[in-house]
Each structure stands twice: as structure tokens, then as C-alpha cells.
Length: 124
Image (cartoon, rainbow, N blue to C red; front, side, top):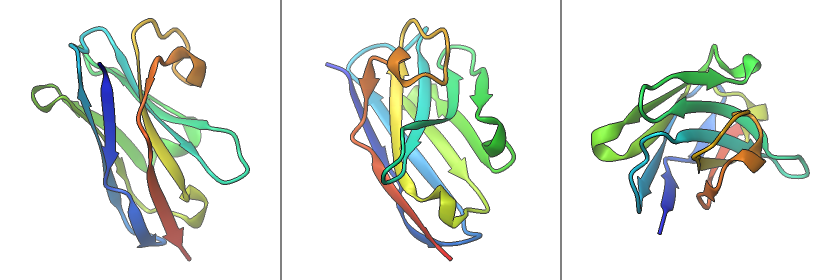
């Protein structure tokens, strides 16, 4: 049974940094794409970044690639999202996702497994 457990969210001030973690378990994730999405109240879930588990190729939503960095530690089965220079508009629940046959990394429907999410709140 695949489990994705996010952690690292919290309440921070504008300009601060946070590192989110996604601990993955339940299977071997070789060949998978691991993604981070976020959803603010009243808005649709949006793509943030993704990484291929095996070779570590990264993908970013254009507006976030200057401040956010996705990485993974295969030995720990963990994916990270480093977020710098946070802004109030980054406030959202951040979700980790995993998908085996992901063609379009920005589409939530391409991912089979999801975590419960971690809240990030950025005050101005």
C-alpha cells in the first residue's frame, strides 16, 4: 500500500523559507514521477514542481522555478520542496503525488497516489 506523508509546513512570514518533505513508502518508486501541487482556498489544485525518481529530472511551473527547488533522496525514499522568499500568495495546502505513467507532469489526474497535504501559511 503506497503512502505519501508530507511534513514541514507551518506559519511563516513573507521572505522566509520552508522545506517540505514527502516520505514515500509501500513500493519501489523507480520509474515514477513525484510531484508537488498546492491548493489555496477556493482555487483549483495547481502544479508546483515534479521530479523523476530514477534520474532526478526536474520540472517546474514557470513562475516558481526561481524560488522553489525540488529534490529527492532515494536512500530515504523522500522528496523535498525547498521554498525560498515566500510570499502571502504561496499560502496553500501543499500535496505530494506519485505517478507511474505520467505524460504531462502538471496534470493532477496523471498521478495515482496522493498525500494528505501540509498547510503553508505566509503572513505579510
